[in-house]
Length: 261
Image 1 (cartoon, rainbow, N blue to C red):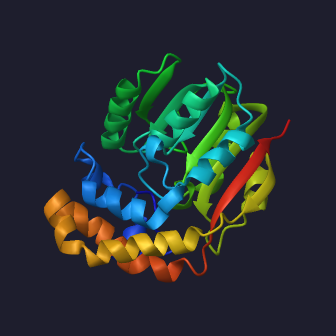
Image 2: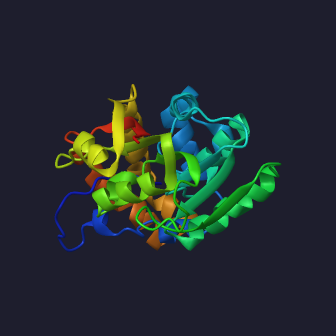
């Protein structure tokens, strides 16, 4: 669940500065029925069942990615911060694009590969450990880049955007959902890295859905600990306690940018 909101401080115990914060949650390869129910109830018709979500991505978000990325069959798509891989695999199936998914956590990559095997996609799909700042990809090697709810947690955001600009072709599209933190000057950062920010919009109902998920996690904290273990549950419970207040100053936005020449 790539969520919560970081800020430029390093207070002890602040979960927002633990970049591998979801490691314990992802150690368990099987989906937790309780978490799935929490998300289904909160998202209703916006729950993207066939994308196997691990976060706050919606049906509308996925369709927006489809329109924004302008992918053709065989094009190479990079999903950075891919998590369990569901949204990127969903886009790849819909478009026929080749998919490269990278994530900082080996546990996430292991689950993404399992999902890839389950879907038995005919086109090229590859998942490996990497980061926003170090993708391990050749220059101008992908036609489009997507990211779901991950960019906010990157500490060196200008460096990350520079790396994404390096690996995407001129004219290629970058689309992401992320919480826009108060100190972020998104347009200026994009421009400095070589991107032109085309749009930034808040998806309808994002805050209500997210808060509903957090409330349900807190209501079911004991059952959650039994289902996924106390250490993993504490990650989600801590977030559910801290994040809602931060949402007031950091909206979740859908950003679309284009690599300039």
